[in-house]
Amino acid sequence: MSEDEIRQEEAIILQAKKDPKAFGVLYEKYFDRIYFYLLRQTDEEELAGDLCAQTFVNALNNLKRYELRGVPFSAWLYKIASNEVNKHFRKNKGKKVFSIEEVRIKELVAQSDDSWDEELIQRLIEFMKDLPLDMLQVLELRFYEDRDFKEIAYILDITESGAKMRTYRALDKLRKNFKLKVKYDG
Amino acid sequence: MGRNEIRLRRQRTTARGIDRFRNYNSVLERHEQTQRLKKIMRVFGFFVVILIVIMMIIFLSRWEERGTESNSHGMNVASSVVIKT
Image 1 (spheres, rainbow over the protein chains, first blue to last red):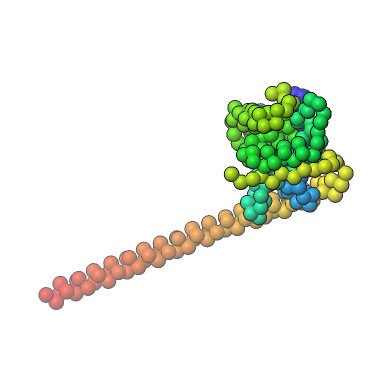
Image 2 (image 1 turned 30 degrees about the horizontal axis):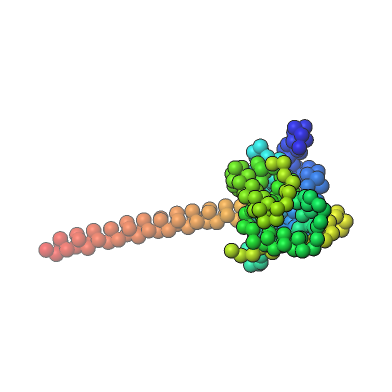
């Protein structure tokens, strides 16, 4: 995100603090991203839609308390969305779902000989099932949402070095277990 | 360690169909409703505080009245005892 874009967003936020209608621009800009983020964690379109609406309502309700902390505004929205999902699963005693697109797995892991087969995908999924939840969350935000470590740390309420460590550990596990080249420019 | 629930999506999720959830007016309406409710709760809380303060003042003044009444009654009894002796 460029400096100019950040400044533009800041101006919109300042305006929206006085007039909530101005927030509409940010709603339109981030709706898709937040919706898909929620869909990946719920695997239910209706539920993701409801949680997405609630995320933006919460954001609007708390906009006056929002302060710039060196991370883009979207990180704040991700944080609210993440809290909403956790709240939903706590309330309904359900288990958090990680819905991953096949294409994204293939993008994450580069097979040298292009020999992707069903068995390998299933093995990868089985492996991910046993990954600690905090590692999965970091991987999701890093590779599926393209968030940087500072943002991940802010969203998950951990330190930046903690976010990096979790990612490296998860990738290490992946490399050791599958002998795959993981696309990562760290 | 509990196993995570990982589901595989064969097809990439697209923006198609997402528009039925996109409704800023409804978000704005819910926000306004919450703000109204907050305002009502604030006013209600304010009245409750005032009511508690008024009740405390009444209670304290009555307690004080009772105190002075019992004091004067005690003094009367003591003076009558002194007269009798």
